[in-house]
Image: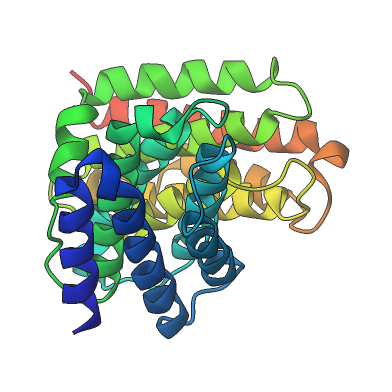
Length: 297
């Protein structure tokens, strides 16, 4: 089937020698474009990948890495909003995390041939994500790689990182504040995964990861950033309330009131203070409530 064909194409690309690698990469891009089209993903990913496939039919050029990076970014954006079976969500977001790290490692001004490791990492993780979105076993186990690349930390360490990320919000520039928001949401997701040993809040954690990645991959002027941040914070508070020992927390309710005051559709520029207050109140609730219930030792 299409998934198997895509997997085989990636395996051939990974095994290819330098002379054949460009054509093998083109085949992967063609297959990935077709599957994303069949999955009816949103955005420009299929068209961007089709244009890249045409580009790869030509001889190597100085802009190869830039074009590949841009196409993979569009593919990642298209998969961020994809519905995923609940029991696959954690592995799905780990695959996207590995894919994003690989994409970020690519250097657009350097020859693509010298960046094989980053390219292979990105492509394999993208294919794993496609398999997981279709409720199929991922062929390259990128989620396992994520566990090795980003080892789990204690809840105390994650809470400390969340507090540091909130403090950094005030220092972020207008053009980069979305990255700071993304990091803060990611830290909250890490806290939840440390505290929720039964994995009962996986759906809320997946929502947090979704909004964090959405922010990270958005344009600097995207109007949805405030709403995405708000949605992530509310998911974090829902998860906190869902942890048995945390129910009924006054800290959680106070944070929810602050977060609800964020206006979804207003630009970040007009409510930077409200957003920072929402993040700060949420991290305060996490710190107070999880510490009080003796989950932090």
